[in-house]
Figure 1 (cartoon, helix red, strand yellow):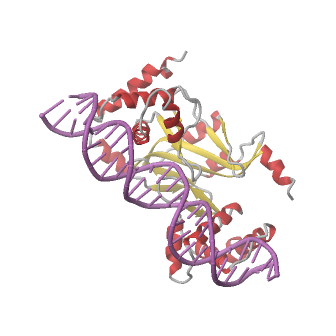
Figure 2: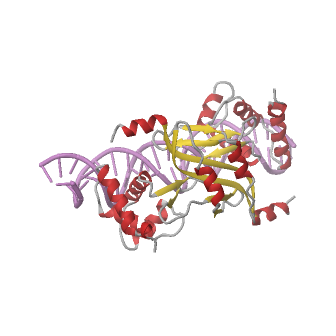
Figure 3: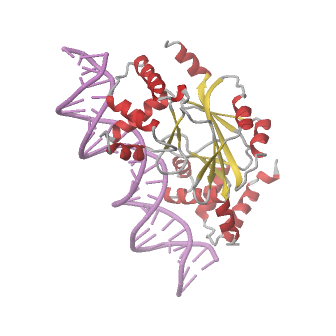
Length: 152
Length: 152
DNA sequence: TTTGTTGCAAAACGTTTGCAGCCTC
DNA sequence: GAGGCTGCAAACGTTTTGCAACAAA
């Protein structure tokens, strides 16, 4: 069990952020954080809103508001890949990874590449201070490659 | 003058695509392509629509429709960075570059790094066939870094 | 002639906002 | 007690869609 990924530690990060910025520590905000913590994979505001209806009733507006706060304290990152919902991903307990996006079916796969990560993260800039990055590779997944080949 | 970036060659790529997919070669589509060709930098549907009103009247719906076609034949790529308009960028006559995005003011800078580009492009995948990629680095630009430091 | 494409306007959609009441601080 | 936060619903702004007229094939 990795101590640094436990909900208690994450909660503390969030609490510190809220205190520092004079935001209130409302039960809704912690409930949202908790649900994100126990949800696997990418999610969007609507998914989060829906799974929460089962055991903790919050409004969609509060979900959006809280996601914004979590983005600011870097507990989650945001992806805007399609014209659809923005996608979110928790950064806690999640190795930095890259994304493969099929331009035909829209499926997203993740891959890790330590060497590539180091290459990107070690890049220095003159007047820019990076905090995180996203690498999206677009192309065809195996299934679509075959499917499109048969159409020729 | 690079032959491969001339409008004639680009037009041919588009024409081939339209023929192959049994789409019609309408004057609107070529007018849009031409305007993109002569426009520098990132643009969005609204910018394109507005600059076109001066000399070629098209509807916004047709602009969106044509951008979709140009995406499919990879003459442009799409970025969805903010909650605002989706941004487009022509791929012709444009070196592959990477993006620096300030998480405070939203400003986007571009940078090129041949070594990084090679590292990314030479990556092979088991069941994925990449066509292009986008690298977004998030962080603080010089101005915002100073601005935020003074708030502490 | 057939049918894909256009322009227009309305609809759709995710997200944001306004506001009255609530609850942290 | 003050004022930030919530839920609700309405508003927003970008993109998509429906449809009649048009024009490329």
